[in-house]
Image (cartoon, rainbow, N blue to C red):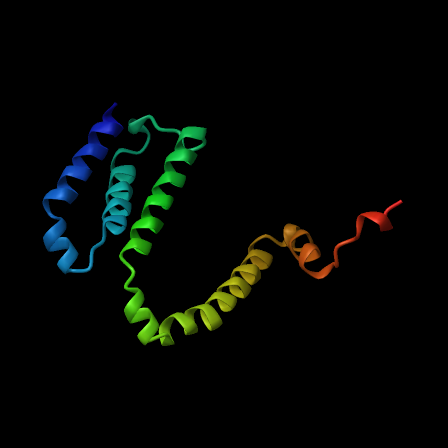
Length: 132
């Protein structure tokens, strides 16, 4: 109950100060992450929320859906068509580098799973008629 009350208070505070925060580049996602971090560090186990529950997973998924939809709705497609430089660099260079660096970090941090990660991407699929 206290978690719901504190979350509502954070929502009311964000609503009250969204104008000045928005002018400084603070989005609602940043504000909620910071407020969750502060509340989590300050109250810890007193909130009575277990992060390993199915409902927490659903809330996190819904929050991600709303965040991505909100960002996509505010996208200026005209400006994107006039100046495709940044998106092209992000998709053409940034995305593959992020995937490769993430894979490398996974191999370094989880060496016991490195063969598990590399097998599917390197082995060709076996057709169903070849097994038997």
